[in-house]
Length: 398
Image (tube, rainbow, N blue to C red; front, side, top):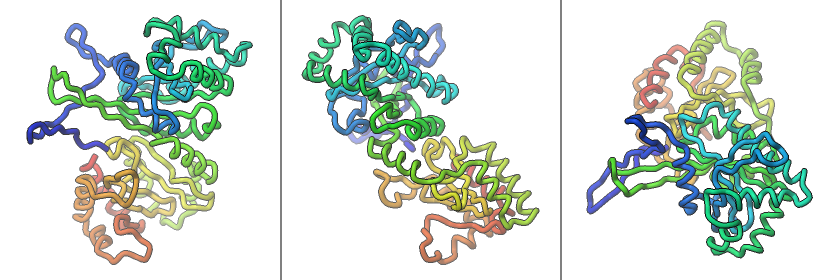
């Protein structure tokens, strides 16, 4: 989670403000995805190609607003950016803004629909779709020249790169990318679902890149750009996929089944359900525990957009009624290594919880063997009577 972007000029600290992708017409601001599209197309150095492929050095945009309706399919739409790299990989890039994203299911369907256009052209032609692909670039008005001219201008060997691109088409090796101004938990879930459903080692791996612009003040020509990826790189994508395939994943149904078999009293069950309902109203998304075995304890992990943009949960609720407070999930990680440094959020949350006498007693206890001092397990009889105070402390950091 980014708490602020600053510049230091001659010893003076200047606070940067987000420079959104907006146009002004008739005095009104409106979100404009073409600005993000143009930024990536005209400044390809911003694209984190090394994170996504690990074997290439240069990302090469080929065409914008590519019409996929004119081929044999006749039912696809306009894809935002078609690109390659110096290894001949093929990229489909869909640009979306936070207020224009809509339903993630439809967005995921949109980008995979473009990929299926490629698949159909490969399937229905004698040249694996190459003529259709090349014509889509040569006849596109977003850039001057032919495919060969673009590769020559990028100073890559055109013949060798074209042969690699032909192989990518033949083998359906298409990299799908969502380019957004803000990544959300819903987008991460959509990407994880996609990557676990397909053979991402060869076909259609999916990434998101977040591209945010900042500037010191209005009308300042100097623009700062921050870029993040999800998954972080190709290695993390493969690890996520292998973990998901190798373990059982709990969901709302398995959580409820375990909860009904818990040893909680009727009164505790009633309070737990009240707490869960209130949590549903303030959480942006629920994740039901990390992958494990079917017999492992299911856990409900509420995530909030204002806490590392929905990537971490400040606490979990186990199906046996236990609450696990996770201060380290609010810590600042560098490269996802170590336990991270405490942040203002983690300190405020801990101090607020410490004002609740029942919770403070638990914090003052000596940690059990194997228990992290940044994580605290609270029995149902401890946290359920004071859940409203706990949620009030949570709201302070939201």
